[in-house]
Length: 250
Image (cartoon, rainbow, N blue to C red; front, top):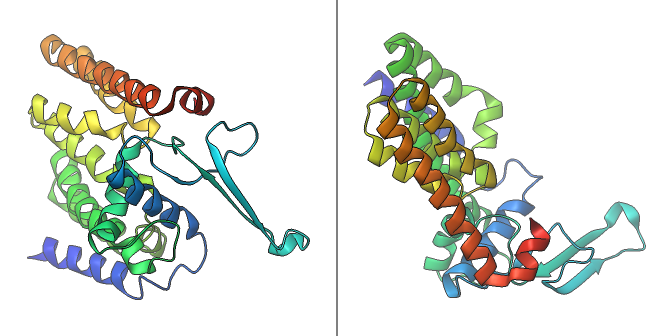
C-alpha cells in the first residue's frame, strides 16, 4: 500500500497543471507528435521539423518568423522523410493525437502531447522501485521511489514528451528481466530501446558484455544477436525510407 501510495503521489504531482508547466522547451514534444502522426499515416515517410538545415536532402519547406528581430527569431524546417531519430519513440508519442483525430503541422493541446510521457512516468516510478528493491532491498527501493516521485526536477521533466522519457521504462524493464534471468523477454525489450533513441542500441550490447563476464555464454550470444539484429533492422529501415537522407543524418 505504501509503494502504490508513493506512485499515486508521483503521478498526481506530474499531472497537476501538466498542460501548463513547464512553459518553455515544449517544441520537441510537438514535433515528435507530428512525426508520430505522419508515421502512422505512412511509416516510410514521417514528416516534421528537423534541427538539420544545411545541405539536408530531405528538406521540403522552410519558414522563418520575424527573422529581422533576432530575439523573436523562430524557424521551422520541415523534412520528409524525417530520420533525425529512430521512429518508434515518435510513433508512441503521436499515437494519442492520431487516435483522437488530430493532424500534423497544426496546434495540438499540450496535455495530449504530454500524455504519453505521463503514462511512461507511471512505469518509470514502479520499475525504479522494483529495480532498487531487487538490487539493494525494500528500504532502498522505497527511498528511490520517494526520491523520484517528489523531487521537482523529475516531476517537471517527466511531463515532457521527450524520447528519453519513453526509453527509460523499456530500459528499466529489460534490466529487471535480465536480473530475473528471463533472457528472451529482456532481449525483446532491449531490441526496441534503440528504435526509440540511438543510444538505446547500446542496451543489448551492454547486457551481452555483462552476461559474458558472468560466464553465461548462451545468454550473452542471444543478447549480442539481439543487438546486431536491432541495429541492422534500423539501418534497413533508414535506407529504404530514404538512403540519401539517412546517410546524411548518420
